[in-house]
Length: 262
Image (cartoon, rainbow, N blue to C red; front, side):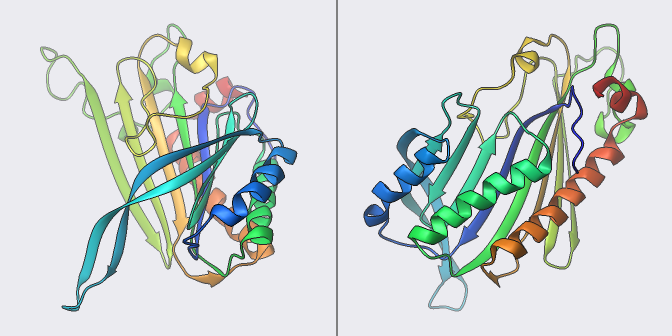
């Protein structure tokens, strides 16, 4: 996990921990803002978002209702990385993915900032997600970069129809861990998943400048077991989740793709 492809197709990465909620955040905000500024994230803003709250109902089932929450956003000056703090979650987003160790250490330092100012008692979901924009070089095809399962049914339904978009999704489980894999094949540009759109960060220009087809690989690896918060345990589990993402990526791309991205 310590080697980075010089032309890696990864265009967006996030890590997220969900933890015990704090209903009143205002007393912690000045100290949190200063701590994130010192950590290299001085661009502060607030936004209102809609969230779903799931709770037991009187009839024995589950009740779901919309809930408006305030999200606190801390971005770096280049607008290529940001921390999103909700009352019960911290999300780290970036568009300039380094090696995993650097990514993990930055996320853990942010969690420790949160823990220092408002105690994290437990974690009930830890996840890591990566979006890769697979874009062939001029004169090459997507089939040279990806296995057939990621390319859809193009060529199987006749040549008289014009392809618009292909979506695939697979879910795998192992104990409390889940691996969710989606692929989207589009005619032009970059496609952000609906739950991430619009992206708050600047994408690398090389992804936006590409003309022609793109396949977006959206790999999400997460663990929903409730555990006491520990920075060291989080680091170990995050590495396991990243290992699953790496295994998924290597299963989907070809040797030609890896050679091209070196």
